[in-house]
Amino acid sequence: LNLLRNLFRAPWSSDVRLDGQTAVITGANSGIGKETAIDLAKRGARVILACRDMEKAQAAVTEIIESSGSDSVLCMKLDLSDSKSIREFAEAINKNEQKLNLLINNAGVMVCPYGKTADGFEMQIGVNHFGHFLLTYLLLDLIKRSAPARIINVSSMAHSWGSINLEDINSEKSYNKNKAYAQSKLANVLFTRSLAKRLEGTGVTTYSLHPGVVRTDLWRHLSAPERFFINLAKPFTKDSTQGAQTTIYCAVEPSLEKESGGYYSDCAPANTSAAGKDELAEKLWELSCKMLSLTWE
Image 1 (cartoon, helix red, strand yellow):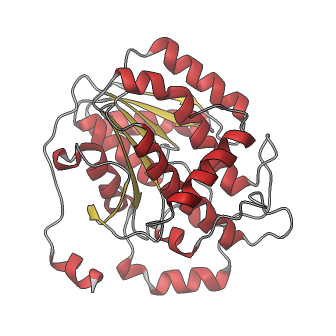
Image 2 (image 1 turned 90 degrees about the vertical axis):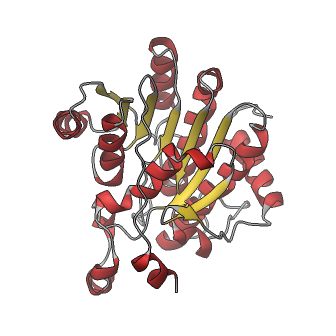
């Protein structure tokens, strides 16, 4: 039904300008992150790509400048699998930037073999949730001073198959790469909800979203049979430009200014399996603070 409705709905578009605003996008050197960067740069924003691989990031900066006609685009090193790198990045932003109006937590790892981050977290929950949780915490004062501002967490419909294993968040007892991915994407949605509550009245609003089934580099860990099914579904999948539209919608759509904590898909509010999981969201918040040794009330 949704599919049919979306086929006949005019694609969302907006001519909102972002002159004088600053955006940080994690993992913006390829895929939807890069498309988001091009769009925001076209709107006049200063865009900072936060990337692990500086060589790829530098190439992306050149491409974004060419595509957008804006030279207000730069990249900085950020490795979300290492809290030391996250702290260094945040320190540099806090020191050098006067404001931060948009934080787009876009980077992610998907269904990868079992691995651990520098801090000992399972790689998917570590990068997709803990890394962005810490980054947001460290940039929050600057974001609040820049209000109105928005924080956007790129999740996935996979969150609806996820559950949070509070007893074994790092999948040390048993690892299933799909379950660990879904858990990390549910964590994105729950974090968005909890954060919205804490930011009420500050002029900072939060959003999580499903970008659509997008053909991107994230698929590199899929097995041959998984790839076969994805190829069958190709007509229903999006390229990166289409995949970026809901992120851009959450970043610029004026009617969302007073909305916070919600989940979006296809440039519209969507239902989430995280509804009613506020108790779980709070427990995840407490656990995240404990794992990262933070006090964040």
